[in-house]
Amino acid sequence: MTSRIALVTGATGYIGGLLVPQLLENGWQVRVLSRHPETLRTREWGDRVDVTEGNASDPADMARALDGVEVAYYLLHSMDGGGDFVRRDREMAQVVADAATAAGVRRMVYLSGLHPTGHLSPHLGSRVEVGEILLASGVPTAVLQAGVVLGDGSASFDMLRHLTERLPAVVAPRWLRNRIQPVAVDDVMHYLVGAADLAPEVNRTFDVGGPDVLTYAEMMREYARVTGLGSPLIATVPVLTPELASHWVGAVTPVSAGIARPLVGSLVHEAICHEDDILDVIGPPPGGRMSYADAIEAATAGFDPAGWRHQAYRVVGRTVGVLGVGAIVAGLVRRKS
Image 1: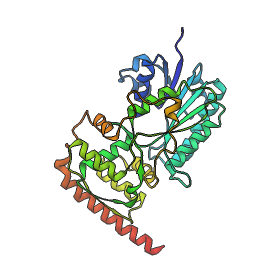
Image 2: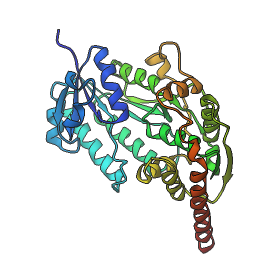
Image 3: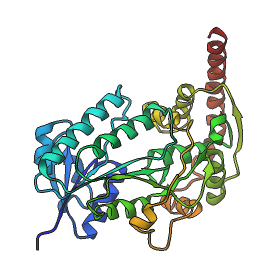
């Protein structure tokens, strides 16, 4: 019997790179679409997949990639600092949706973000728009809306860990008090793989989160506790805008300002689950959902969280300068407005 074919877009990214071997282990024949196939040769699964060279924004490339595909995973975004990612994501999603419909794909699965109702940041608003485009395609689609994904390599997790590890004291925006429902990357893999076999009538969003709800400040403190770092001193101020805060993150962590800007902008929203239907429809992960503390232990198993502490004073000095300038600029803007 011929294996079912699953297409994974974004296989060179963090989530896609983890999903491919999970699908292979579950009996899928996996095809990946990549603009740079040579980058896949170093992956341990690189010789076990069918590679299609192409761009998801090109209708002809997508038609070739989707030929014979049963399930297509959409793990793409244009959040690269290159400008107008909202337009680019909209156009790319429409190309994929049209191509999947024409190819007779049985299901699409898209990983989006948890969000509240109402006005959203450009980052979250774009994620929601992409989901709506795929849901309207006519191909049954599962949009998994996840909170901060906890895993070594996730941009959101990397931002959290580097801020906590490098800064024993943090002056941060007051919206870091907003509630977040993070989720372990292993649990995300469970839901992504399970979504491939949802019933044909399922065409909807699912909220995906772990069992714990914390503020970002609490996430930093718990990260420090689990990894044996001293609990950071966190003070909040009302004047640090998302734009200024993204430069602060870029100055303190390896996360580029182009990536940090939309991530930080999304923190102005609470990101918690409003339903947990996925636990009934797909089922919980084996052993249940992973706690925040256990997810941190798993995510930090491959590195030393205290490795940066010998540079803490230098980093803090630089950060205070960034924050000082940010506060002054913000104050001037507010007085002029």
